[in-house]
Picture 1 (cartoon, rainbow, N blue to C red):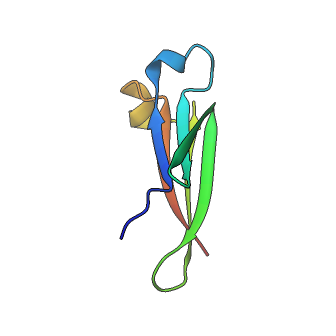
Picture 2 (picture 1 turned 30 degrees about the vertical axis):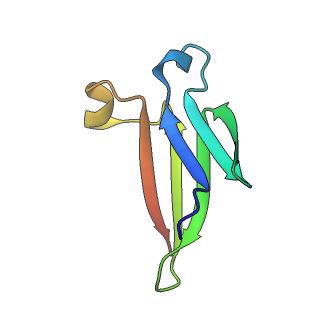
Length: 79
């Protein structure tokens, strides 16, 4: 059985406020929504390696930034 713990999305209409990353967390079937300019969580893969997942508003560089992206999701294996 799956249980939803987290929803994460980018909300363009909150871009002017500077916190367009929407985080909805679930507990006991009830949701709480917060907005932020960055979000990060740490998880472990099946082999026990630590994996960091993060997104920051205004963190793009290079080609993504040139194409208009303002936030980039990063998945990092922590050595």
